Image 1 (cartoon, rainbow, N blue to C red):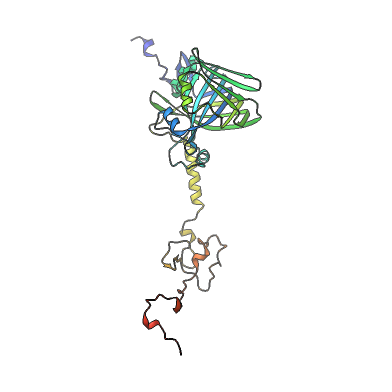
Image 2: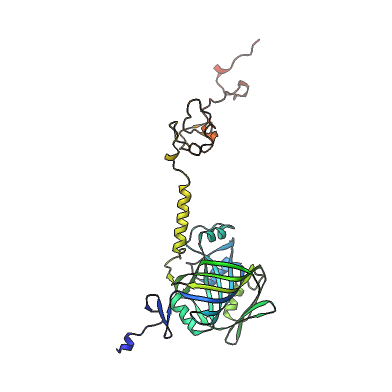
Length: 363
């Protein structure tokens, strides 16, 4: 074997830690995107149909409403990028990270606050072979080479995907926006050759325009278009938007054996928040009263259907320490002294009462 053959590297083999050789070029991580524009549209689709399209049981879709997931079509024009200049079109789904129970209606909001939301990339055609090879080798993205045109016309961003001579889809989204969003950590999932991978990245941008609806999707005759028809598209978009200038940073991908957990920093921050919430509730030992009892302790008995708490100090009123946070119980009503049961009047007693308790009427 020659020296050249010994030193050869495939696209999937790191040249050095954090470096990859792609078509005789060295790509170092992280990969930076310095200037790009984005347009997107999101649609509500049946969860069952989306699961059938994805075909990966390890991916858990995030439901906006019970039985309804979110699918997005996005087109990106990379103008200044470590991988060169190219166009990209993504078909993706919003997914949950880390498993756990999903709550209806508010579950998506809660998962977003906890950092448990990611994006699953289902289709990702690009316009250059170098971007395709780098995306597949470094991040395990399902990139293919197709023809993608992105232009602005009459106040609209228009993206068209063509495969060979077949028209796949055309997406039109309104342009314009003045909002700015700061750098935010995100997660992308993808499956390539049966391996599920997670890629952490961050993005920021300016010129963000966001609106309800505001998109038009036209489908052609192609297997990708047939997948979108199976999801019930085209239909009215739930929301759409565009970003005039976006910058991003892409880090190394990580393999997921079962389900991909949230980013490590997010997981640590969430655990720290939960621990802080627990610390804000003082333990029973810290709430020990000088009267010799523990406020809020387990009930010692039951009287009249109520739980009895620790005894009160002699002559103390149940509400005397209600304003003291160190002596506050669950409720002052649970600290009342034990009361004698009420006597039942004779006329209200059952007919089977004992005869010795019945008195004869006076004459």
